Length: 479
Image 1 (tube, rainbow, N blue to C red):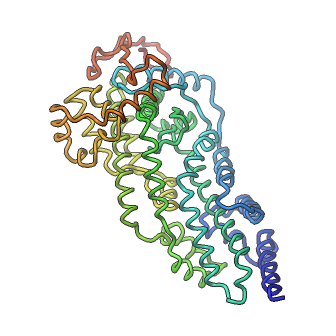
Image 2 (tube, one colour; image 1 turned 60 degrees about the horizontal axis):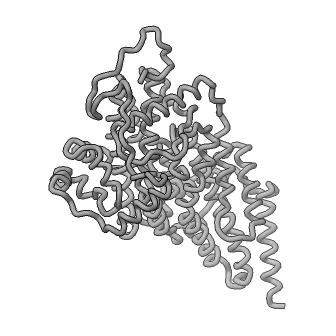
Image 3 (cartoon, rainbow, N blue to C red; image 1 turned 180 degrees about the horizontal axis):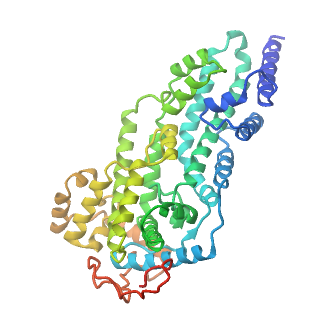
């Protein structure tokens, strides 16, 4: 009979949650939404309550990431527009031309699949698996912290019911986090112009993708012809995707660095307990500020700082290489520098969704040392050429380091003197896997393809034949 009080208390606790989530409570659900940093309009609150009710029925462990996907898709479709046939045709042509231009200035593997044109909803759907992989360690840490606080705060006579109640709170905490992540990804879907726009490899199988609706928004207000914007962004996206296809180790290295960092995140349970004990449901601002400011996340550990340093270096190397290659491939575009400057400003300032992700996961997506990395890649290109530059991506043992970004001339001197080769077995395995994927005659390097009207050399800037004066301004430049 000793378990009967615990059972009754457990039933009362569960019933209280059900009443609250059904709206039959004095507590205002919109206050919960506001405290969690979620929209508090009636439709969003109703969706939140439904997801939390579903979480109560979840008997499994972990986070239901379908909650995040549903939230992201709802935002992505709000102001969606259909891609016009003319815009689709222009972007497909731009992607084709971009691939030819990159062939002239790079020696990395070509893409296996045709680049895609995605709606905002399709982008959110395609990228959610990576967002979930990156965020899951943080979500579980929050759920564990809620469980610990609940157990610590419960009276001793109710300890028997805490196993079930803790699972309920764990599921609800996970659902709240998933809703927040869905809000971030949904907002990002309205901002990004391509699959690789945020720097990390979000697309499966190194797929290149553009988001036409957002590219149109990117070009609004700029005194730059639409076709030049489309071409420049197409070159950037294909360069990014090709690099990750060429350097097969790179994606795993980057995702591993992110998850290592995220696994080290813990929640300050003392701070959480203080907030819980003083929480006023009619005024959730303190809790909301704690969540959106990152106050619940303690300072980074030494292991996290090391993982973050590796990640920042890799992000800078990737983005710096893409910048240099894109600049070389787009020499025909009269407004190339103007588009590049717009991309740089946009990347430097970020957006609301990136700020929200930084708070949610404790990770900034933008590399701090991009300019320095681009200077290094340009110095390498000038000294040893594009082929030797791109060969540095062949193996993690030869890719430039943070010290090389600081001292490009030292890297150039080593390359000119002949740096030691990486382990022969590793290189043999790399060649084997590349040959398996690309075919029996693949060497792992794309031979430069000289466009009929393109420059004789990658660094040459003479334009192609003059275009007719009556050419359609929306069509891509003649190549």
